[in-house]
Length: 559
Image: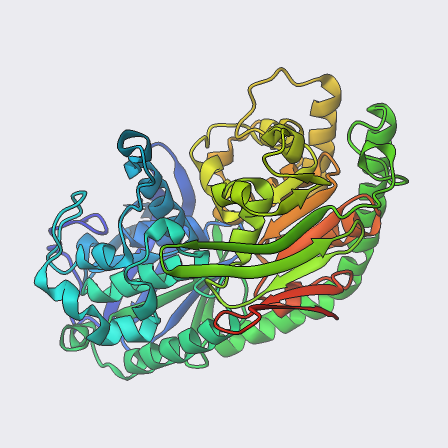
């Protein structure tokens, strides 16, 4: 058998075999372990597949094997040896995912030479990044190829909506803009198989509509093709869609592969899968209602015990942090202006947050939502030149970053990227690090902190997994643990930048219940960024809407 993704493939399927990809009786292995004991699956002409399943269920590993990042290993059975045959090579496959976006940000940080240059290094622009697959070089400061001057005319660039951000540095792009840039690069690369993982995560409503229409067009072409070889004559590759949740799926997706418990739990038609989901929904309604009530009671007990055992150090359900009722604004912006060069992200923003006011931050991708959150956390240095007060003190007036962060809990894409870089930290230590506001744990934790971390991990379904490493989790599981880290110290303000990215339905339900309960205790104020209307909590009555290009560029309303 030839390994999936090898450059030589003498056993490859042909258009006459019917199967574009054929996997029969194979295990999926990484360098050391078997991660999926057995899988059999095939993709034929005319089929458009969705791969789905719970966080940690095996879906991510299966996709990595398709992309050649893991190995399909044949097993022996009574019918003989299994094997894998494909009509593509490793270089024919492109994967666009939250993890791919995180790796790109990590790479940009490694290339950052700001300290050497004694000025801010803007890094690669979107134009330079796209040109790397069009004959350009990834060498730093390499000249752009001639094709760079006409990128705006490419249909792939227009379809992905990146014309206006081509000359912006990758590190200055929003999460949604980075995802669209990665998708555009994949299309420009000439790949024959495109795997899209959670493509809607982090996209605003307009971008979702554009992407859904785009995917519909791709799937329509795919289902009309008679063989995989037809794609050589097409501008667009074949598509496998990978999603945590069965939502916003193009109507022409006709086949579903589901993983659960590291095994295939469903393989069949879309219609059959929808019928199965409805059966599960009916069977699970009463169970979920009971679990929600037990979850809320358990969380409230943990918080009360924490407050008593720590002498109020980690918050109390009866008083605000520091034992006093907040009367001054927790956060105050007065005519704040932020931008880079000619790009004005925020203009004359005036806004304040009082204790107990739970805010929803809305606006299209790139409108400045993440910039606002980074001004609050101190991750954007322009905070020191603007009139911004955090917990009553103007930034730069003598307070330390630790004075600020000890009263903040943070869940963001930036934090997730930083934690992936210290992926060997155990889950227990990851949660405990929330007490110390550190990336990783560098202090000796107390017995109390370890006990509390264990309680929170159990609350979210991680019982018995405290010594497992953060880096071994799926992307969605990592995000769930980071939410526990942010909430564990009962912060005055909990900053949530797309907290449900990568979460399956079960984790998403647990996390939204957790956030709702935290808000109702009265000790923590939420600042929440999400593009998914189903993730908006009832308590989030205050809305800051950003309107780029308008004057004023923001509006404050009540829901």
